[in-house]
Length: 337
Length: 282
Image (tube, rainbow over all chains, first blue to last red):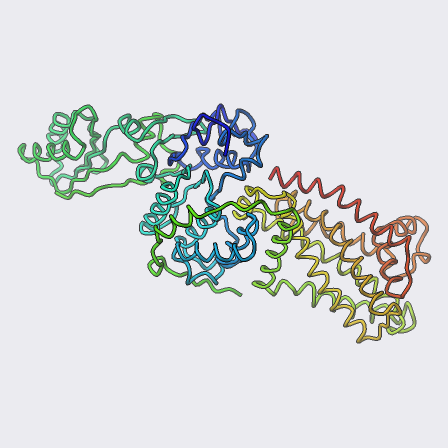
């Protein structure tokens, strides 16, 4: 199919895009292996969408190089367009048209005949559970349905590389899980997926490698394991019954978890980051800490172990906070004591 | 008007992983569509939009009727002695004027459409790049045809009797539509160039009003001062309305047809590439 031999779906070197004074993308180097989900994690305005748009030939880079399956995104844009599909942050379908009309339109534009386009869109609507909504205008669809029709449009011709730009932003947890299932099914058939997200949780669920970007630069890159190891395995949040016991609790946690302990503004609350040096999992360490606290006579009202939030990842990787904290989410496994 | 009825996610049937997998594997790649076929598909999109929002046909039905009635009765008595006599002269001209005015909505629809996410998808498809824009203009050609039929019907009711018969009238309409298609590339350019819908509308008015009024649509240019005659006699709208008028009157005005088509070609050659440059840069 393509003559390149590197085995990389995407390869960029020093990719730059400036908008006026702002360097939205400031020297991004990526190497995305074929057949995997590659996560690009970062807050709003980090340069994720701009990077995707350059890779999908929608924006011309101001500096650096980018190749998709060995084809230059500027000089061989047409070659690239024949291999990729894009699901943008906003629904990339025509809101005024019905689900069927959208898919038939795209099918025709991809070269299918009238009959084949109708057939394929019918099958896709069926597979995506949208048959009942096929005749409705997309503007009347719910958020979850929009995402589905959008992804369906992206796989009308099975792409070699699929860009998913924040596919679950604004979705309820149930629709989000359904989108995840779709992504897994697409990858299982050999398509490479570049997924951008603001949620560590999502990257964790889907991606095999992750690049963390901030201010247009890649600040960390690696497998999930490598990335997590760099920020600690998790965070323990405690609420005590008695504020007077906080110094004692802090001491116990410091000893058993070998972790930094931070008092919170609430006088009965504390946070500790679980280290990764130990061979135990974060849950085992947390359980041990809970036992030690009970032995020391500390009454714990509420105890939770969470994944490091994007905020914490950022704090560790960059030394500064994410700009818009409203977009960061803390995925927690609640363990109530 | 549309009422927003959102179907909740809980009513959604689950995604079928097996049939999805089968679809992904079965997906064979057909050859790319030709430039012509891609343009027609985008034209079909424009027609679907008319189907879903038929109110947008207001400007090609009510507006042209208003134009014919207003100018026939406003100027008829003063300029030709009676509205019935004046409409023989006016109708082809007012047809040209109205249709050319309607073309400016193209810029507005391009401008509102281009900001939507669906354009990112269109622009990432491996198709002939101008087909998106050509599709708009093909859809608009249908609107111009509707406007023309409406105006001629009103004209005939008011007493317009074209000597060219059906053939002359159809030839006139065909020339008008070809010219409008070419002229619209100015609007696609403005639609992509300007930031808001309002500014597109404002600039369009600035262009379209002098261009259509300073022509031979309403009166014989010989009644105008010399400097104005120089402009009016060379205006593409004058050439076009002379050509349409004579075609509908049963003549075969080779010069005026050539001028009209020449201008049309010039518009495409200049504004077509500018539009595509803006489109690729957007």
